[in-house]
Length: 283
Length: 260
Image (cartoon, rainbow over all chains, first blue to last red; front, top):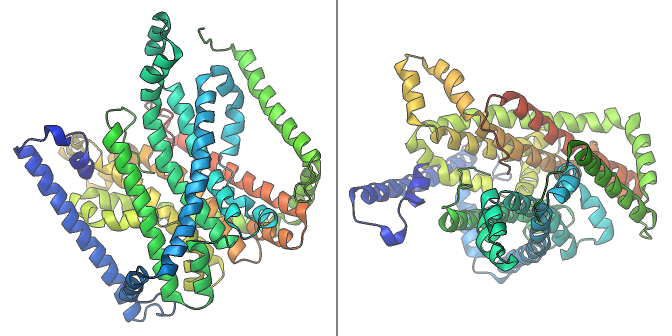
């Protein structure tokens, strides 16, 4: 709550004044950074202690500092970036495909009461089907290729985009739509001044959720179908007993997930916080 | 043109009709498919009946359900109190936020190989994978809900002299419950995902295992029967959580279709 207040609509850069309130907000966010760093430090030390005390074998969980060291030295190798690149390329291709077809499709469905009514049972029935259920089929169809991962990325992220597009269209203000109709404004003006402002926040939410599910789909395929990328690398390293290396790639994947989350949340908050759909919901 | 909402009967007809048409379309597409990997719908359905009623029911469905329920239950039992403890104090929230956000951002599929390394292949590995991933959405939503409570609520409860536990169970928990359910709905999808992955990566029974086993034996209808069962498991698990939510939150008149 406090963090959101500090970063939220209370202080856009243009109107920020050197007042008591902004000083308070700044002190608050400094506290947040310091305490957060302390928290990370404690977590790392706790992990180090668990291993050093012999509670778990260092073969299973290597010391935290070893993992971080290896991760840092990996940053300078070509192979590391190659593996990260493989995952990210699959993610980008799959997510772009999902974005290009699922969001417009959702907008089309949401635009018509009849269409939404007709397709709703199918959509709500199919949505909870776990995409990973089809991994075995992907092994048969495409084998350990990037294609398998891309299919799972599309499948994983399309629902969030589709549903958010439908909600966005159905959330358009009735009065505004009626006004637009009685003013007989053209479809272009309607799109620009009613539809897009209403749908945009939902697009941002769809992107935030979809981006995360896309990464999950991608890495699922890499772990199980051996599509190239981080998931395959982690699995192979564990199998070869290179535990520290495996954990360093887990760390890298976590940081990528974190970066996606932070960027998409910031985007959603900064540019669209005027919209009432900006309730604080953690997904 | 003004859009009119169709009448009740007509609306129902549209819903049922389109759904039937979608199924019919799948039927036609699969019947005319030349791919050896996509059998026709009747083949899949009859295989489904043969496999799951009840030859493989106790040997594969029940273990899967057991793992899912255990993992999810642990996540709820740990996640909700964890969220409440973190949400209670601003300082604790600041201290834990980066670590918790990192944990939540870890791609769930990678937890499975880590769990295999830690616990070897077995029940613990699967339950741990599910619980570990599901804890974070539940805890973070509970925490956010608690932090977002209006201070008046807590102060009023305190002014009335309610003790700590009473305050927790009578005031905080009901007030935060819509957010807890948001966490549960996100988590149940993760739980099914982790179950499927864990059963395919390290198991000798369960629905996930059955799918992979059939695939490796080139038993394509069997594989599809398994996929259908996994889909059903996901749908039922999700429906149960939604049902519970509607039951528990009936009082929460504000409940609109906020969906994540």
